[in-house]
Image (tube, rainbow, N blue to C red; front, side, top):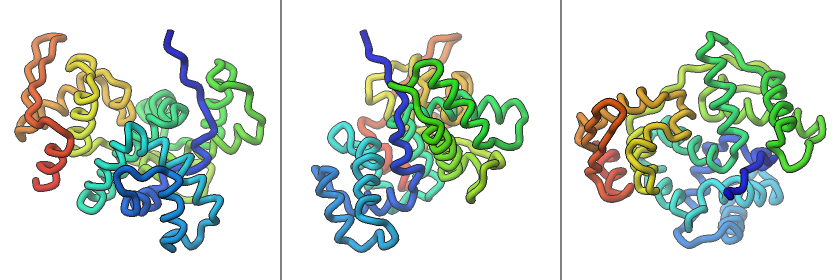
Length: 262
């Protein structure tokens, strides 16, 4: 029986932290573990406003669970892209990995952000996020009940994190306006290949929960992949509910080389 993942407070170690993540990727080398990365980051002088304890938490509780999994494969991919891809693409990749590491963020975006946006709401507030967190606790999605203070903090982190990634307006505020948010073609290609190379079948790939982070349905994902196929990034054949995809690049590295050059 597969153990159910529970919500944690790990998001408090860092929200989107876009610029901090880019700096850590520059300092990181393949094979480097979080402890060594922390020491190098501390000595680098690149985080002058951050205490040593805050930096340690950022590396161990934020960066490592997101990018140092699978022997550092995400960090290796993103390090190669960080100097060439624009921030809008990088931040969307950071969103994917951050949501995989923080189930509460992924569910918040899929279950509250997008339904609210699609219903015509113009803002999302911390009180909305608090109701989401409280309902999750009542549903047994945390290991133990959180205190009111913790609930308040995590609610604020959820909306702030969405602002970091560009889904909501930035700034220190308890109510934020929705911003237009659409997956970019390079990120759509990256995600499709990432899922394929992880062993996800073609039909299952179209309905994978990661696409819902961008508000996409199965039909919309198929449309995005057909657009990518026009640029030679894959071959998509569909008949009814059956979809077959021929993948034209053997690795993410070769795909990213093509996307960077193009």
